[in-house]
Image 1 (cartoon, rainbow, N blue to C red):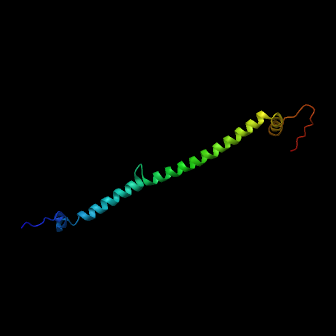
Image 2: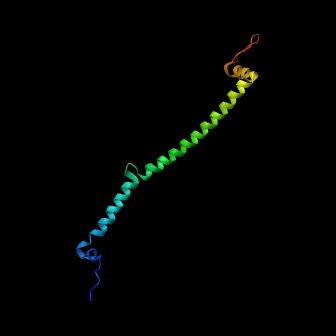
Length: 104
């Protein structure tokens, strides 16, 4: 009767005692390299994800600011009194016959 061959018999030999620690150390070093030191490492991926979130928040804030400015521009175009008030307050314009006092 034929004996069943052990496919891992070569690994169990006493002269291969170095192989398992070598594989473990090599795998650990490659994993550490990929996690921390490679160009596309996990740390750079996390940093890029955080930067993307910050950029999206900034875009949303700027979009809201643009919408507010558009509403203000529409209001200034539609209402001449509002335009006059805006010009007087922002650019210190005065109508003819107004007394202007400068307070410092």
